[in-house]
Length: 195
Image (tube, rainbow, N blue to C red; front, side, top):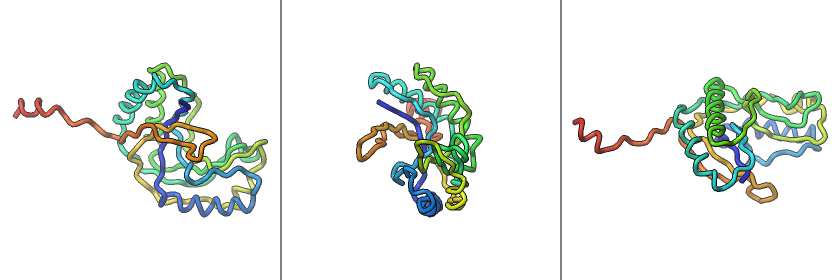
């Protein structure tokens, strides 16, 4: 299974991105624009994971998610990888609790590593991919023409484990979902014994 962890912003938080992307499509029709149903904020790309390893990996990732509270986030501005003048990816940026988001990513990377899953260690840039180009091209005009998206903020409360299935109509399938900051109910027997 080809897996990654991600946040999925609510539709209302993406209205400004939708408007900006519509403008971008007019100035750069040759880009491969990601369908809105696939917009997400990747946290950690896990790559190919054997199905037999998924339960232990999911437990470790779930524990990491539970140690972090909900995040206040918003979509703000544009960026491109590697640089706008020679870009293969156009993305909308993420603003808000980015320090806490980076801490979450660090802990998810460590959880994956504890299960023998190798993950990238480069600095994390929170973003939402909206278009790709192959070969790389200058996207500075596209960024100017689209106008900077300033989306409504939202409270991210869940982390999803998504399976990537290229070539299918529903390319990303949710394999697991964990609530940020979720803690299991205490053992009811231990409560009774102390009262």
